[in-house]
Length: 339
Ligand code: NAD
Ligand code: UD1
Image (tube, rainbow, N blue to C red; front, side, top):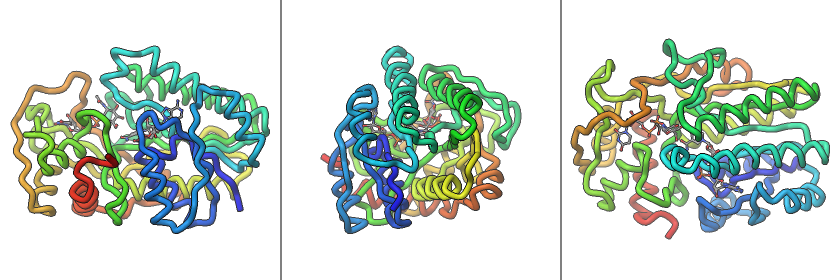
């Protein structure tokens, strides 16, 4: 059985990915400092897959512990989810973000080199495209970022490109996620923001469950279908399947070099379209007000997802309605998340 180190595996996307790779016969070792997640997520995944998961509470900044883990296991690949992701916090605490995301990733890469592990799957983001010159967004587009979180993702991509150039048998697939939402159909795992949510879908679902009073729609004067921001929402289970496809691709290809791949549906949905789909599919009320634009936001963002289809044989399956239903099952069963 191929062993995979999954950093950040207790988090939102990591926990869903564990299910897919375990069901496909890979053996994950999860390495997470639980700074933004709960051990309960791992227990729930164990219930879903019906087996125990090897979990190590550890920090990617702790190189000695990483070395110990690499000495104990022979890994085929690392799937690297560990990182901080709050855009606003990254603006006020840039050093924390560069330390954790950039230095942390370099630590993982250095220990991989020491132990001869050559396959890396990275959690990148559509944020690396900044304000795209046209839509849909192709992997070949110029990259630029305006906040430290995005910069940290971009810097890591540059590091990976250089490492791949220097070491020709090192393979790095950079999965550029669009906007992941939804949850496993069991309703037992899902997104559980520790603070008031910054992102749209968790905000909507917390309004619906009564934890928050009303949604603020950030701007209704964009050049879009109804004036509100358009994004490419993708079901987290589809995203998780994309990681499995990337792993399988690495298992079947000796030299991939640095390979950036969009994971999106290729379709844009506006804020009001998402709110209305949520109301319609769940029967819940979602009161909202129109508020000023959020600084740093762009009007529209959606992927061209052809590369994922051609190279990985991956296409997103779930539609917006399903994303709403699955989000609500998780939120309504777990009104306070994992607590
Ligand atoms: P998450 O916060 O739920 O998961 C990240 C996990 O990493 C958490 O469990 C956290 O405890 C862990 N972690 C953080 N710093 C660590 C460290 N120093 N050592 C060990 N573990 C650490 O976030 P997520 O939504 O699952 O995102 C996973 C990855 O995907 C992140 O790198 C994120 O930047 C990236 N990403 C997320 C989105 C999104 O919208 N959710 C979009 C694009 C990219
Ligand atoms: C945000 C981050 C981006 C990150 C992504 C996924 C910013 C500027 N960008 O992107 O770096 O990769 O999350 O984690 O934070 N909206 C509202 N009301 C809300 C929340 C959001 O109207 O309370 C709107 C936004 O203006 C946007 C859309 O909903 O049009 C989606 O917002 P969000 O979920 O935060 O994702 P992004 O802005 O795409």
